[in-house]
Length: 271
Image 1 (cartoon, helix red, strand yellow):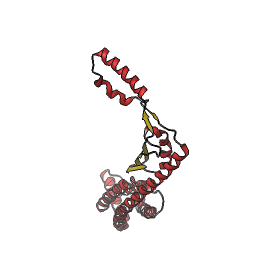
Image 2 (cartoon, rainbow, N blue to C red):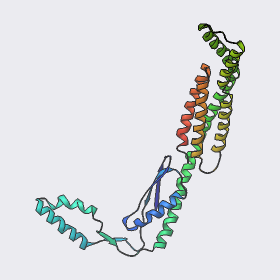
Image 3 (tube, rainbow, N blue to C red):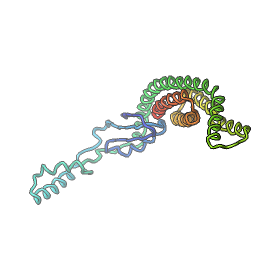
């Protein structure tokens, strides 16, 4: 029998554990799990019963040899034998195979048991993933709504930015007693206003939202692709925040970043 337990993790980590008698089966189990999983911290435990009886037996000769050695140490150090008997748990040769094991039969049985365990694990992951997808949908919808609000404010932004740039340049000129061609002032003000324009960032962020919606409905592993999109969306959001001087947009940027962080946490746990 194979028992699989998995917790969320950004990468795939597998720890296998098998009885000493079939420890050689651990690499095969690791391979079988890796073939079907791409994320998660997995613990894979193997247990088995042989139709030919117990697969191992106590090697009395080895046990008596170890006890003789421990008795000698206890006598020389003035200790009781019972104080040293826990060391027997570390002895690697106390048990030996009571009968030979068919390697091919073991491989076939392990493969069947592993496939059944992985099937059950994937069913549970699918149910959990559906719940997380619904949560991500809600957060993505909130981002789209907030982005629409930013777009509305951004439509008025170029004119306001141009007028603000004119005022700043005018104040600097008058304060320093400079005489500059008004057309030059207009050109510089227009350049500053253009640099503050956020329409391209809004368009790219909206495109990333659409791509994320598509990826969330795609089959197969999508976790890393979602993480990449979150990273790109965060970059565009930061640029909007740094270029915009409108307080309303600044508040909306903070809201989008908060939703993106929640989506990032979910994406890290999606295969």
